[in-house]
Length: 368
Image 1 (cartoon, one colour):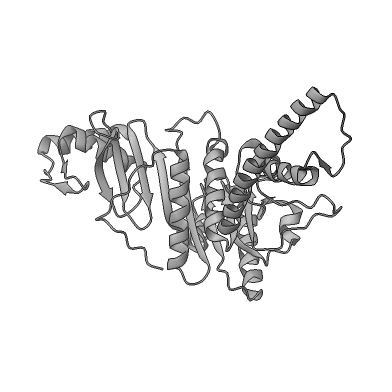
Image 2 (cartoon, rainbow, N blue to C red):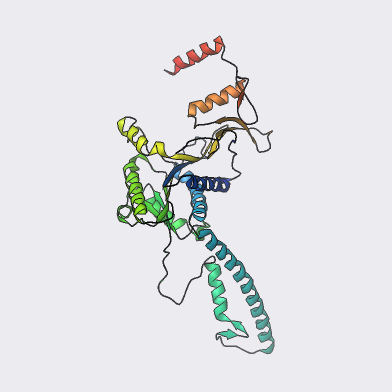
């Protein structure tokens, strides 16, 4: 797996949360085409700017809803085409129903003038009641055709998109709230599970073609690995021509309190974390933002009201910088120690003076 980065193409900042979700979805899709077999990648999205008032899973839920929807429509075969058909049905049903309502209004006015009463049959004054009900059903179900005459609903039998939450409680909330009734365009193929649930350990996942792990924590690392390996095994045994794509969103699988940073944490990194390609990254800072869309470079932006978009590019990097590195770059740029061109590359770098070196030494001693 190549980790090459295109430094000549900085990553632009998204215009909105929805735009960020679409960029992340497109990046995951492009990376899946780059990887011939099972593709594993990660997406990091944090717009809290250091504010820890709410947990990350809460602050990134709206992004996740848009992201899952966008990538599902892009990745699952035939899903986008079916959505277009549904939109067309809605438009046609809206026009047809409007004509029927106008015809009913005209009929009601004529009945009022004549004083006659009409009993409801399959047609009333040339209006087909069944047709009216069909169009109303199409609008109520957002373009999906529902057979009201049948007592049994036809279950979706195509490729599955599955979202794993840290626990069953969050999965249940998503199943209830991530619906069209709440303004969320979530395809029927999307299923929700908790990492530690009994069902997650026994269910058939051979039809899963796209799986998400949303904010998995270190306490779920063992379950996450078990689910991932079992899904990849069942998928490989299913003889499906559809590639399996796994996306980790905001994973925190290693921490001092659970896995530690010793042997257990290092082995987890080697087995799983280090093999995840970072395909999209967006983190807001108090003075700017750091972003990356694969295969472009990591790009550091600073707020600047004089720029057209409100931000100016201050650095491009081939790797994800640490928090201290980010702050050091900001300090160096604004203190004039380094200069950058329009692509964020360093020009006319000035070496540190003896006074600078002494100041760094003093600051380092004070942090001990």
